[in-house]
Amino acid sequence: MTVANAIGSGQTLGTGSSPTFVGLTLSGTVTNSGQPMFSARYTSNVTNVTGNAVVYTPIFDTADINVGTCYNTSTGVFTAPNTANYLFSGCIYLNSLGAANTVFTIKFITTPRNFIVFSCNAANTRDANNNIAIPYISPIIPLSSTNTVSLNIEVDGGTQIVGIKGTAPQISYFSGILLG
Image 1: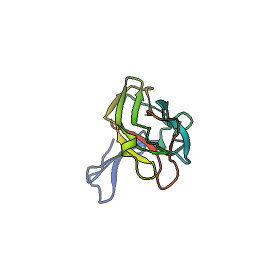
Image 2: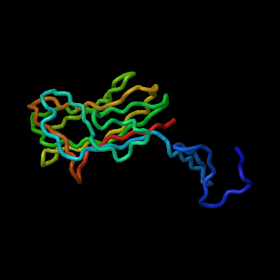
Image 3: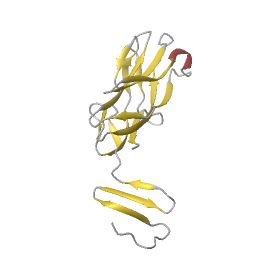
Image 4: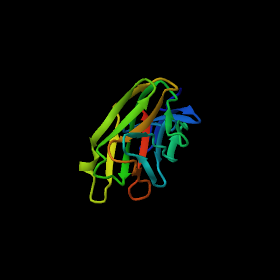
């Protein structure tokens, strides 16, 4: 690679070819247009998916970002394209919670291991409209190429009346990025 003797303000020094381009700005920011990442959301409400200890796998049906097409909007599953460390985050907005719907749990289901990232008493945490919004973030997860990640949510107690909000302004979403 040949590097010019000067780079001007606002310019990027880079190497690579399509579709992946890696660059370094004067301020030290590394850019990579091929960095695997996704952000997916619900586009409509889903009803009666959990309650009474029913485990539900959310399928976020619209990917606003899906670099590397690693997130499947038909299954709700992210597949790691590379062996690396990944970070996931999102928000689950539950609606129609009843007083008997007690423990709410969000779990990351991964090929190497499963783990709980959030748990609370949903009945005591819900708002006056019987809703609750739970943001979550995973620890950094080391994944091998082709390992998968999805979510499971579960609300215990009561009956299967709890749904997920997917219409604005309260939407549920799931996102992730390869860290390196």
